[in-house]
Image 1 (cartoon, rainbow, N blue to C red):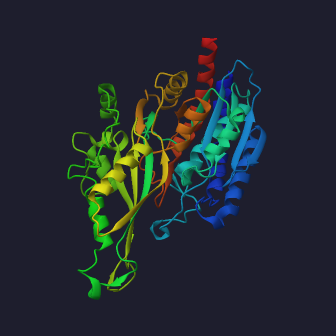
Image 2: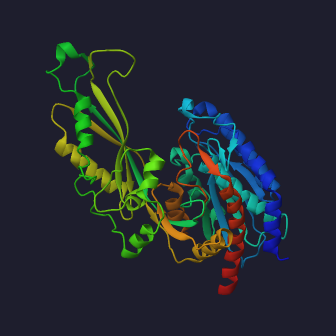
Image 3: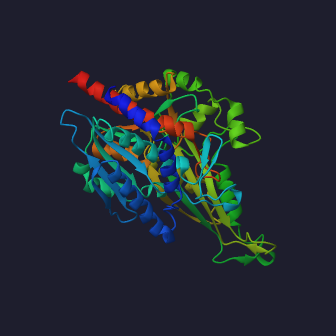
Length: 463
């Protein structure tokens, strides 16, 4: 029996223990956005520190940032000829609200059929645990054939505000040949895939003001403009009836999809019926001239994420609001930048906003879109690993999500990230009843084992 087979057998024998460990981590409510949850964040970091030590990593440390800490560990005894892999994951989760829409306690995992339900199950504690189980299967049998570094962040759900500074301080510590990012997904339980493209993000707050304070709508309605109506009109006109964004110059930098990419996306087995069922919407909507999957993963978007103005409590209050505010997110595609779309948005507001109000625009966050090299050795190794486990050739695809660390790794460490995770599009991430498909959890463990050995085989061939 060779080393790979030994590790695979070990992983299969530990499935129940692996599930119990995942449940233990899911019970920790590591919600990074709540200041009163800082002790629970430290509890999760401590749990992971202990786990890294259990699976054989060295120099394991909870490393401070200006926010929540990063858990780091490494094992560097495979030799200078072996590749060095940096694994990235995050241990923070989204708030569970609205609690009344959960069918179970969000931080008390339950198993229904083939799924485990809990906040963070798919995003991304299940993914992190799958990788750590794979590492343990190798360290407890024939040993790791690669040099390994593990970096687990506690602020991904906040937009990773302190990660860039941490990476800048620790470039030498994080130096690697490839970064494996588990914050990813496959297209369907029976269809493995590798993500080569991620959309970026530009997130704005728009504030509009008319009067100096709220006014009686009976005394001043028809005299002073209503900022809620002004802002609603401005927002509505940012897209036309066909879904195309109307901001001046917004599409100037958009890299068009190639014929090959459109053919690959057309082969994704998610038809319009699937999107309708998954969303519960009465009908689909989007930019004319593009398929649903193209609009979902490879075209830019503009969405209103929140709107606030006036009185929204129970009953009546006849008020003419002084202010209105909206949160606007844009998903960006290759070659777009947050700076350029901000210029576009600002030009639109300058042109369209009436002189009956004043307005302010603030960018709250951004991340660059990413396209990684599709023909690299890590991608080829991952393709073979997925085919071993699923028994069918995986497809290359894009995701519509934004993962800020991917562009940071490209810019600061000079390497691409391999997006190798096993969530599903319908896992209800960030929503009530988040789930993780347990067959994907177990297959993910075995995929990571195969990937490591395939990566080493490629390195040996090159040598």
